[in-house]
Image 1: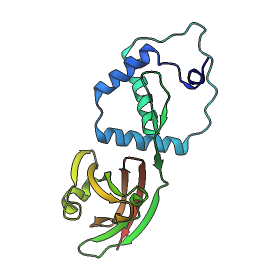
Image 2 (image 1 turned 120 degrees about the vertical axis):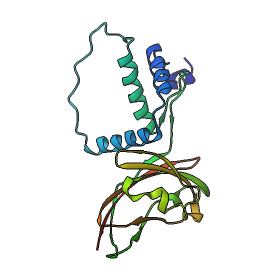
Image 3 (image 1 turned 90 degrees about the vertical axis):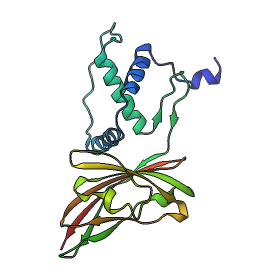
Image 4 (image 1 turned 120 degrees about the horizontal axis):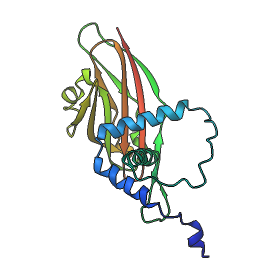
Length: 213
């Protein structure tokens, strides 16, 4: 047996290939993928050691069912978001540079009338020189896409679900990185999730801002 044969992973079972194809056909929204990643982060932070599962029956096999395909698709989505690329041709898995930073808490005082600005200490400067693609989830009540278009000319509203909205824009990275400022108009607690990606890495960040008078 050659060294190449020893390092290659076995090909995926046929049912797994069908599950991947079925999940891809569903085409979940960008915001859905963003929330799946947030859920995975929360689960990773609070998970405990699971009980040892019972051994499967000796003759258990793959079942061809829609439920299996959906479940398999969800698992593969989690793997992809945690930084694993699955090769359907049975080749080696490839790790992607993917970082999730701890949440940071900030406090800001805003005037009795009008609004205030708070600077989020994001790490877009950690990317190589160039431009990074940014996805940012904000509270819907902030109308982020309306109040920040002047500062972020390429800002686009992707979608809104319930009380959260997802936006996309491009931003300079590396030494040309600029501060990320948000406009807050009333007291309260605001949560922002930011994901920025370049050709070499992806960084996910979360900021919690407490605003008061």
